Length: 157
Length: 263
Image (cartoon, rainbow over all chains, first blue to last red; front, side):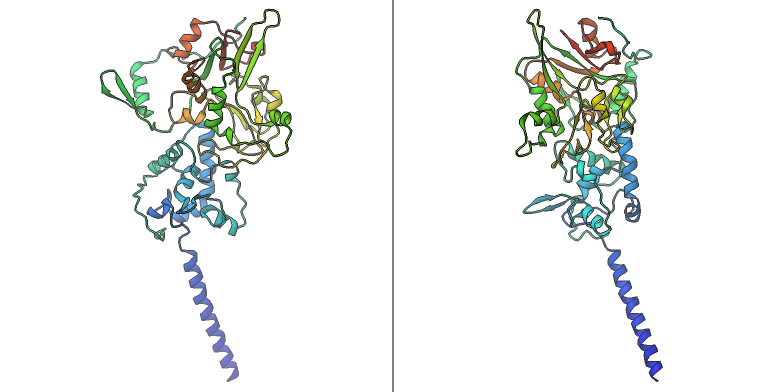
């Protein structure tokens, strides 16, 4: 009898654990796009979300060589494009630098302990004349149309 | 003054139709609003094809027009490239800071001690055809773009400063301090060497000129002319064929892209 009770309780714990894992997975699959950014108004990034999550570093690494050495500025993989689209605007403080701990780039990189130094040199908010040109080029190359209609929770990402 | 090397010529005369097509493809669209009035579109299309050696960008500086005490080109360069983001650290020595701050254009005053004649000129990266900075770079970060612009790939620069030692023109600077608030068009930061890149972002977005040349023209001097040295029809090539000009340290046979007249 006691063995049966232990067995059932183990099964119950197992089930509960599976349920918790499901919830965690569901939480994992949620969006990391922040409300208040242009990205929250768009249906998708320049590549499907799962591709972006795994390969964004390769994309921008190849693109940087094309841009610096060959002068190609119309690539859809563009760090300036990332920043322009994903930077979050606060009503009081304006644009929040994207590498800050709570922001789009900074949050994941802090969580995974990946110390990136893109923003030692690159602008962490769109800055200066012509800043929007790079983003526009990336959008055009990706065939993404910015609607400007804000979806506050950034769903569908 | 012996001309040591020839400037790149186009292999064949340019077909005007092809040029029109290229202009259209580059998105440099011009609309005729009224007779004599041409409205240039503000946002030119960004470059989508790799740069080629069919163009070679360069400058012609007329030192006779370069005014004493004027530093409009330097200020414009600082604004354009975000060099004005640097500030002297507190308690730093003035002389040391003057040596260490980032400078892409220096105003230089020359005096002939025998005649007393004074010449002013802006000194920047001379965009050599055979750049010593590229020869010595251990990582390949210092490179010459196909269109003749000598620049630093900051992704591969390790900040060894060998190129600064190799440059006969003292044209390069090292960024000693962290920078904040960079401009999107000019990423730059601590630990890298940098120098004039002929406003490379303007080149890639199809703009006409450089910040220094624009500022000089605006100040009413017009001493700096930017253009394509490889195009026989360009203003700069025509001007070069008319007036005497020199390369600085032409004895080094570097075939500089920046030429000076009146020195």
